[in-house]
Length: 304
Image 1 (tube, rainbow, N blue to C red):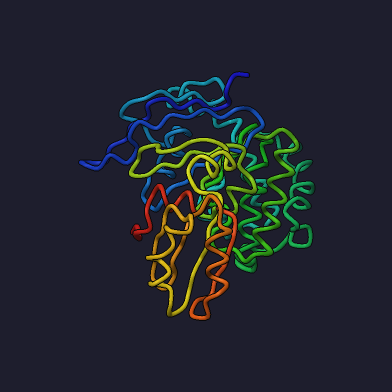
Image 2 (cartoon, rainbow, N blue to C red):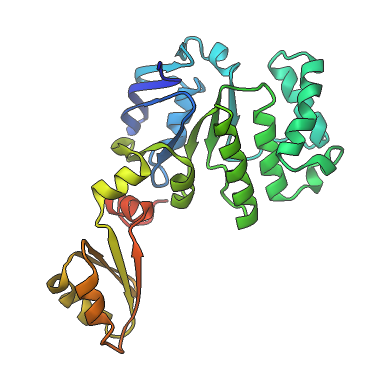
């Protein structure tokens, strides 16, 4: 099938800083595609370029069959966007925010009115229909921003860190709602810092760092391709001694971060047998996950 979004060789430079450096990916209809990367990796810039909100220095973008930025306005008529912040109008009620936003698309008020109640139910805000924005919690505002992004019944939904700052209950509700949209055939392009979010939602994803793509596949494929299947986390006063011994017991890669030693193993049985005999360490054995892949590929240094 023809991709919903096709990005090839995308480049964007700000002064001497190349924020996006040769990013290429395609998004198929009906899939959730994730963009992962540390702070400043170029994720949000890539989304803005894909939406035609800024012009690339090089590369080609096609969104819903329209060349971007040349026909970005036409493409955005069929797109919904949830930005990092919640740009809701405090002068309007919850329902009025939806109505006014529908008018930005040139949508007849009758059509918008027909969609308001289903969207309020979708966002679990039916009892807040006439509430002012200032009275809503952070989770309510986030859900309203998502409902607002759906007012034009978009084919593609762009989500820029949709659950940052939310409590676990709100995050799980948004995940459930996004899965419902995917089941309805919507396409989602997602940026997130939550690896469990990416594992739950994304059919495929790309990891970018310093503006450059460094890996792309399904979450399951990335884990199997990039990391050992078992991780043993070791804490306690005997941790340093164990870190020296770990390679002898089948742990091909050992990494110490702060007070924790991470041992990555193909077969953890020998290492676990030895650790069980020691009283000077505490251990946690778990399967490798997407966060392990992310940290291996992008490093553990803080990004500001």
